[in-house]
Picture 1 (cartoon, helix red, strand yellow):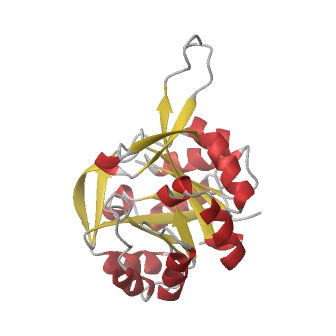
Picture 2 (cartoon, rainbow, N blue to C red):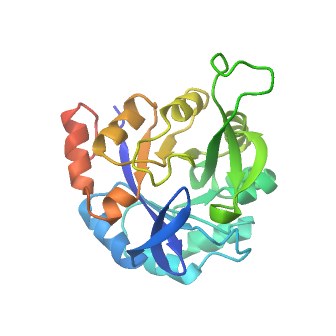
Picture 3 (cartoon, rainbow, N blue to C red):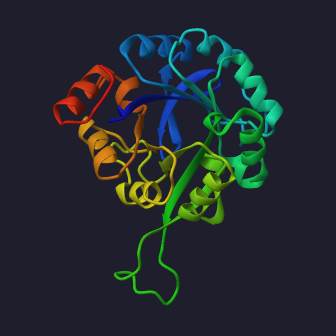
Length: 264
């Protein structure tokens, strides 16, 4: 049985790791290079590095910070933020990334997913989806309608609605060549209330690639729920690790005790 992955996330703004609620009100969480080294030593399975203002600021990702972070880790590193072309992808891979995460650029230019997969392989291309619940369509009874989620781009105060349905976009992204999906609930992000399990299930059950749960973790039990009830293949978290509520080891011991296969 495949082991489930525990993935700390480094949201980087101005060269520092930050964490907010629903992508707003950020507080400092430390130096990305130091945190990356600590998580590598602590037994994290992978690491994700997001330059969270690169797209909204319309600038390139900070390659020097990526290089210094990559130099500290010996586990797979996914890098995202401000990546708009396959040449941008190539620069990040040269800087030490193992996978490239795209979000806003993929929505604006879906062909980027296919081009990246053809040039570097699907295993390198991660489609990150920021999704928010939306009200039922007009004329549909609120109690009868299934939940719907809309895709947003440009995180934070600059978040923009796209009218894309998150489930349909996930399916299309995989068809274009994405080898992995990160599903982030904007409603739950930073709240510590748990993942949006319905969103995770709806997408995980529709695609044939690994799905990483993101947004809302407050306890190891939330991670268990994401894997078991949400049908995710991996769980991503930030606040609970950055601010010391739990360690990677704590989470892995808890999951193993619940019968979830993890790499010890």
